[in-house]
Length: 221
Image (cartoon, rainbow, N blue to C red):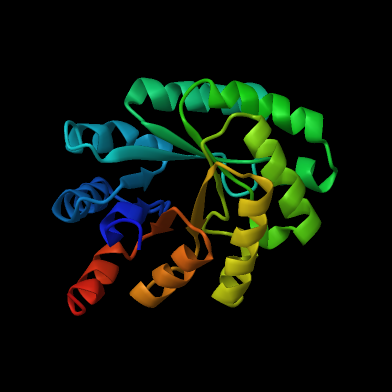
């Protein structure tokens, strides 16, 4: 591996029923294991930012899940509010209806403005898409000046398929967005899963199972 396992992981808690103590626990886990980041919903950005201040761990916020249905102005508002609340990065869902309708200019315009607000990882929902759509939207994400193209949210239908299919998608994303980071998420629950995604080209792993993965990794040290 190019880096330590913990530095791949965005420890994730995007449960809609998460309470404050759940978010604080996720941040505590991130501090203990020195994960790359913590990904939360917008309502918890302030709390996460306070907990992770001066740790070097990024506060990542999920925007407009599961399929990017909000109007452009609302998406921009959400991103600006996340920045004001202390977020370091955006995990923003592309408008999947626009992808399906091949509204590439509209998508690029939307993402370009968002990417000016904070470093953005764009979630393309690859499990909803054909290979051709994955290739096209990955190119748009690069053109919009995002830092990363990401597979899924917690609602992507690919979660119900083999991880080897997700790995194949990562390779398409890498080919069509050269130079960008690639983030894999959805059903990555073990060290074996993480290794499979990294081997396929992932630079970042989004998972709620970071602690479990780190404990598994320690067995091999």
